[in-house]
Each structure stands twice: as C-alpha cells, then as structure tokens.
Amino acid sequence: MNRAPYGGACRAEYASPALELAPVRIFSSGWQDDDGADGLMFSFALAPAGGGQAMPFGGRSYLQQQEWTGAKRGAWTLLCYAHDAYGGTSVASTAMIVEPAPSLDAEIFSPLLGQAVLAKGVSDIDRLATLADTVASALNANEVDPRVDATLRTSFLSYLLDSQPSPEPDSLLATAGALLALGGAGQVELEPAGREAGILVYQRLVETSAQAGLTDAMPT
Image (cartoon, rainbow, N blue to C red; front, top):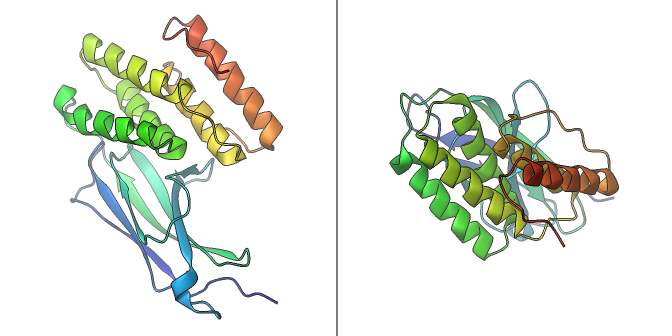
C-alpha cells in the first residue's frame, strides 16, 4: 500500500506587515517519501482562513516555491501540496493576514498586469484567475482612478475569456469567482460540485459579465 508523502512544512516570506498587492513567496520543504523524495511534485493554493473555496496558484511542478505576485487583503491559509508518483498527496499549511494598502495607483497594479500577460501566454489559467481575483478584490474595496479601474477590469476579463478553462472543478470555480469579482460583485463562496456544475457556473458568469457591458467576448 502506498503511503503519501510526509513530514513537510509550508512557510511564507513577506515584508512585515503584509500589505495588499505586495509579493509573498511561499516555500514547501522537508517532504519525505518511502520511494525517495526526488520524484515528488509540488503545487500550491490559498484558501480563506475560515474555510471556503481554495484557489490554486498553478499546476504541479518540481519547484518547491511559489510566488503570490500580489497578496489579497484578508486572513488566509496558504497550502503546500506534495504529490508522489502513485497518486498519494499530502498538504501542509501556514496562516497569514494581509492588511489593506495605504493607497493604490496604476504603478502598483502594473506588475500584476505584466504577470497576467505572462500567465496568458503560457495558458496558466489558475495563475491568471488568482491574479484577476486579487486585482478585482483591490478594485472593489478601494477608491481607484476610474480610468485605471476600467482598464484593469477589461484587461483581466479579456485575458480570462480568451483562455481555455481547465477541466478541474476547483480551477473552473476559481475562474468563475474571478469573473464575478471583476464584475464588481466581490468574492462569493462557490462550493465544488463536480465538473459539470463548474462549467455551468463559468458559462453563467461569462454571460453576466457580457450583459454588464464589461466585455462581449464569449467562450467557444
């Protein structure tokens, strides 16, 4: 019987205090496996501290660190997953609180927009959805120049709707949540209910965004 990876830890490095839209680096370390730790793969996600939908940062890789390009205000649980070759998965976590930024302007958002372009270029829908949700949360909670606000919302909506959605329910629901937040409604709780339900949520929110006049792009 296969035993899942064990003994790992998850930690985060950031400036103190952690501020909204500032970078956070997440490290996964110490994992052991009965077949050797060299073959392990890693992935990362974040979830509201009180429980709720986890948002993946991206797919599995051999890298044991992940950058959260722009932190989202609130209390969070950062999740570090370790995966072995036989389907075993374990998770370690660490908590952090992100404080509101004193002020927000176009210069603060610029690195996030650049990262979104890179994520779109490599079809990393998970990273793109996380970036979009972070930016939307900041726009919804702060007074931002209307021209900057409109440019950011339109850009991120366009990137999301031009990208191929992942078939994974968590990814679909994270993308749907990002679309909803970009529409100005803020983040909501979306419980995973299977691939079919995720696709329906995604399509419905695409239609809502189009009706709001934010974009007329529709998925094919």
